[in-house]
Length: 558
Ligand SMILES: Cc1cc2nc3c(=O)[nH]c(=O)nc-3n(C[C@H](O)[C@H](O)[C@H](O)COP(=O)(O)OP(=O)(O)OC[C@H]3O[C@@H](n4cnc5c(N)ncnc54)[C@H](O)[C@@H]3O)c2cc1C
Image (cartoon, rainbow, N blue to C red):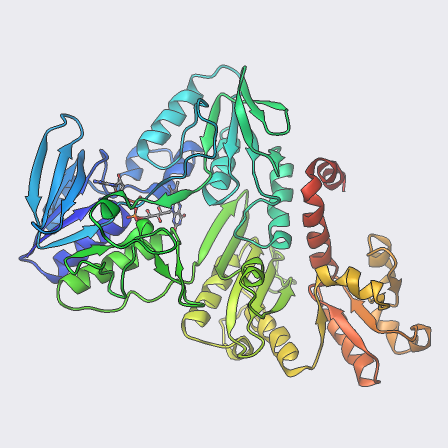
């Protein structure tokens, strides 16, 4: 059996090495059009930032090391330019000489990845992507040649754009971040992304929301608002699209999402051809629709599944949850499943829970607050998605939630997870258990909640807002128009409460829940503001960011 693999990085190399482990006799040829195979593309931004100092650490394998350990025939600087499905051959061009050859296959694996999205940045503007070893060589050489402080414009505030920003700042570069949307980190809901925006400002990044790059200008670039910002370097990180060029030319079916359509064992509509990685349409674990998710874990998992299938041991690649994590200036932002905005877009019913627990017992030094958001199907109690932003412990909690979703646990079942506890690691009620308790209370009707964006309408309809935090907390910042009745005085001051529907709130939602229980048990109509003052502040500020210039100065001074 002769297998040809197109693309020698995450998906392609996973398929190649797994296939070798399953079949010692297989003939396996990997064609990679670039000069490097199996390089650490996820590490590239950190080389730019000087965090990874040794360039050779990015180059995980070479054709020689792959030949000696896995007996793979890896050919770099070889581009596959066409597939003849009837003859089962590929045309291969040597990128350095242009010489073309033809190679036969029994099985073909397409692992060509994604390409940078084009047509957004203006033609004629010199930009660089941050996707390959050549890119980082170019960027580091360019920055090394600048006298004085270098300036960069990063276009796009998604995963790669934000990683680029962090590393450029780390390197001492002045950065302008230009984002077309009204928030940074678009995969997150706006209120969850607010801490990232704050952190960018604190680090001196000039963030321009609702803005695009219009044209090249003298010494920099002109933005769509007419301003000109300095730029020795412009990094284009507006996103990627699946590289389906080879597949499409060969008549392989492309899914509605734009990625190559595959079945559960990564097989395309041609039984001899498999496809894996960023170029492929994934099956969404929430609704089984076709979706594009460009993450390394999926490329590896699906590469392995393709190899299993080729070796005659077909498994199922299993649907994708889109679990992802970002580190930005010491903050960690992580997500799994669907966001609230996506649920709204799809018209799917959902319940929302916000909590702000400490990473571990607060009496033990070093605890950090994280903000968590859980999205739940109100009919089935299934977990539809989660987002977490904070410091330590975020990565662990998102992975627990991803595991819970994979295992089909309900939101209420999070209360029953028996998680490791000692004060330096967690609390006796882990943040995951706490999330479950809130979800369980809502599911059982023990408490009723109101979301930050529903508050204005509820008050306009006659509800009264009661802040149950201490007087000192109230003094240091409150929601305009709220009355303050601290929780510990609530039972004695019931007479002060107006005869109207009540909305109670505290700092993060916990005291508000206790207050809501006190008031509902005496028959009052009461709801707890979910996530408390902290979520409300993040939410309204994120709305304010649509007028970013005004919001920016307020937030910095606050
Ligand atoms: C800067 C950066 C940081 C990232 N960080 C993370 C992260 O932290 N976490 C995460 O999960 N994901 C991250 N990713 C995404 C992750 O790297 C990709 O999801 C993953 O590499 C996809 O694997 P792939 O095999 O589909 O494509 P790739 O790894 O991109 O490999 C495709 C290869 O195919 C080659 N190729 C294309 N066409 C041909 C052809 N016709 N002939 C021969 N060769 C061809 C290309 O040259 C390329 O080397 C990051 C990506 C980048 C660029």
